[in-house]
Length: 414
Image 1 (cartoon, rainbow, N blue to C red):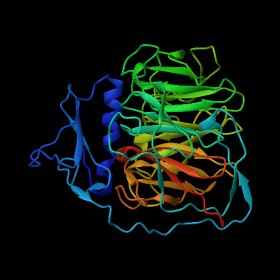
Image 2 (image 1 turned 60 degrees about the vertical axis):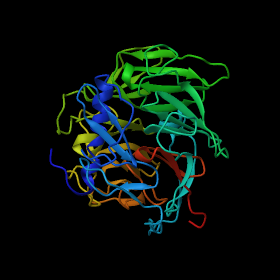
Image 3 (image 1 turned 135 degrees about the vertical axis):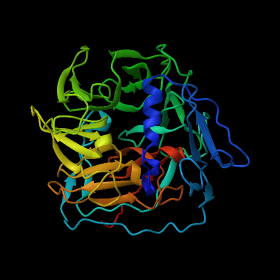
Image 4 (image 1 turned 90 degrees about the vertical axis):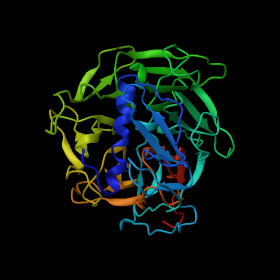
């Protein structure tokens, strides 16, 4: 594999997926004081006991200025955090469809000329990699409730964490947290989580156990229930008719489920791995709009696909120009979101940014936040995975390698 430039970071999610898919386990991190073999004393490293491959991420406040094979963690906390922010020119207000993240479709007033603060605020984590309640070990998908409560899939810790607005010290374990395993009181590398308001529960892609599970949010809940078994899921979405959409990374497809069924209906992909318009190469996150059109992050094709309801093939709506950092390109896209004007928001992981495409604009996107190289500054991201919006239009990003969740406030003068 040839790695170059900022894309050197984009290969790391493959290790995550392979380790989860084949049930590899991480050893305790270690480093080499002399940096022999590429390990820096300010990095945390994890080993796959099957392949002995090492994955290293710099501690909070440090940026890898070396390479994937020779990690050099540089203190970037004194760097300037001021960046320009792009805006759109329209002035009308729009509603934002957040059904994919919350299990219902609610109205969020986001002006069409909205912009977000370039500097994020850490609302959860940011205390290094670990298993304490104020730490994460690679946060993935997340969802935001009406009261700005955030739930996060804490991937390697095999648990779901909850952060309540205003609590800056501790988060709460609300599912799993009993070690990685297949018991009903356990999770194994969860990748995504939804809030289902109708049943007051969480719906979780329990990726390592190849199942979708539901955990009640009511006090005293100690275990979940299996909704769909034997499915190597990655991303989840729900529409306003309470159909559940699940991406499946082994068959490279997306299926729609009614509660109580285990087979589902194919709605996208299912034609093997490839780069055809009717194919995916590792579909990760998924979004469904009010018309039941499905948007899918096609990870290794470096594009986002839209499958209209009932279609036999998809349409490229972002990327698809090969991996790169131009505004016409994506590099390993992850969580996606679409507002009611059809504007697409994408976590562009390999470029450490969130980028937006206007409806019908296949030429290029606009950087919303990040895009300042990998790092731990307030205006930087490092291998982001998940995103969501609250009802006020604030943007939340799961900043995986920094083991934190960042909130980017919508500007009040927009």
